[in-house]
Length: 499
Image (cartoon, rainbow, N blue to C red; front, side, top):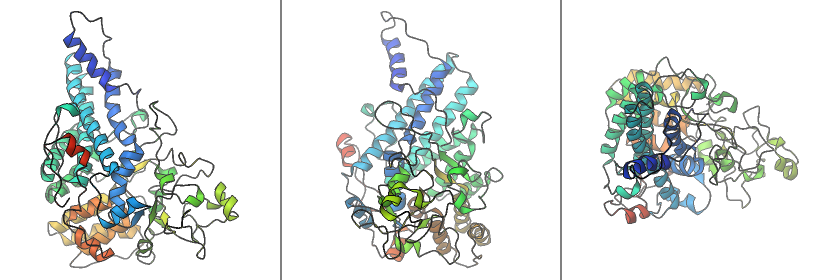
């Protein structure tokens, strides 16, 4: 999310409790400091903080299922087997942590919407500012539900402001996406495409709302409405001419990026975690260069690209290969100089880098290895690089899918071939373009934050996984299980089918 300058983060609970205290003890309480416009901005800024939890929310909540369920990237260790077999236990703590963070963000939105109305009524903030801030709230609530439904399918829609007062049952996946459509619609009606002040870089935009609105319509099979939404993005976003530049450190917030989470560095909010640095690079870096090596590419994926596909080297790096980004020299990493005599390749064909225990594949992600800082510690090596959640390349393929589903084969071919042209590939003209589209989704989006969700949304996920990886997904296991801790806390919830 393009949001580099968060305002001072004050506890939202303090704001709400102050209001409650005034109401309950108005006769006897000492005077309470009056809320200001800064408090309104702060309150909304704190909602964005949901995404700043890069490890629990972005990586383990979204990156894990987006990549490990689609099988082109694998997770090291026992957890990796959960994803390979599509048997993620309901007791899986990462799913529960992600669930809690998501609903915490939703509760913040619900609280903020109430308080913003009150602040506008009391003329603490202008009606114009209240309208825009509420639009940001609607977008963020829609986004959180969007990913919850993408992961779990049937999740509760909560109306209250705290966990204690919400014991709602599961809503169906379609019900959730219909709710999301309403939030994104409210958001896009009152958000700008751009902000005039640099300090607002990172606030959600009309473009982000239109993109996710279109995606939500696709989940509901309302393809004509999705096309209408996507078409409004034309002229505001473009493909980067060089695929490698999309995730480049020096090209952050580029013309293709629609929704980008900002990370400023090693600022710390003071409650024990670094909220403005992302763990994604050290998480995916080989242990041989000082990373954790927890995520690595499937060698079959590295070999699945068409010949001359420029996306191959910009997505996966393998044994004996140099990093494609000229700003990154493998030989400059301290551990490489110490252990491997400063070679400038990812190991060698004879001695691939398989991690400390020899259980990695020797192939790694390029998209998340973009910060040229060999002297940084593993926990901060990617601290200042942003994360793109949505970009225009994905939207063009989404639009192609919509056109296929509405019978416009030529229109779909044109869009798919536009994406292929950037990749350096010849155009494809077939009557059955769906297999071509699935292949393009795979080679355009793997290693980012969306592939599995796109596959599941198409309805082709079961056949796709069987065809490409010979894996039979157990019935119902294309969804994550509702966390067992949530079932214990909320007796109205029911487990997803198959678990």
